[in-house]
Amino acid sequence: MRKKFKFILLVCVLKFSGVSNAHDSNIATFQIRHLDDGRWIYEVMTPLYGIDQSLIASSSDKAKLKAIPKDSVEYKQRLVAHIKQAFDVKALSRGEKTREVTTSQLRLGEGKIKLDDHLSVFIFEILGMPENVTQLKFRISNMANNDSQNNILRLIDGAKNKKYLLNHKNNFSGVDKGFFFAP
Image (cartoon, rainbow, N blue to C red; front, side, top):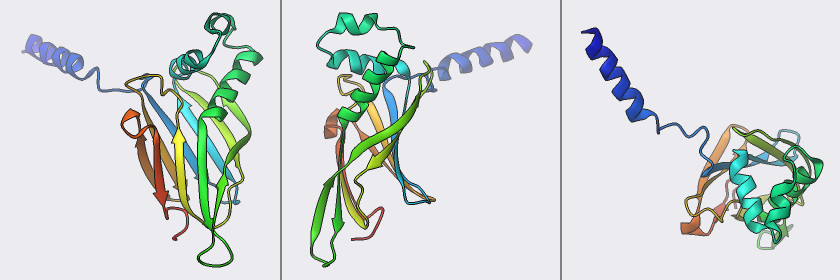
């Protein structure tokens, strides 16, 4: 009986060992978050390997980049620049007149990073977000060099949240209408 239990336990462990995505560099989470104080932040959560491979793939001097120590300021600056370059988000908002629509190209400001092989976290302030956002158009192409990459974009406003799956099928892009403010 005990041998049978151990065998079943071993089969279950082997069968379900691939279910966990904790270290899966093919998955990254991106969040656009509206804070209670009115500020907006952009968060990136990904294993270091995935974002590192994306940075290397986009580099014109791959050998030089690979030689930079991962704990150096230069490496961190390159990662930050790479993430900022791939952030293409436009916010549409209502003007003073109901029919007047303004489009704002959003930018990433200052931030902080924590590099870790398991989960690296990048947090930036979003600059240029207008009031009364009715629509977001987004393309977040970090790690698009990876054919099996899936990026999850979460829009968060208090207790509300909405998810989008970004990958090669949708060119890592999408449109959200009315999540933050109704049109």
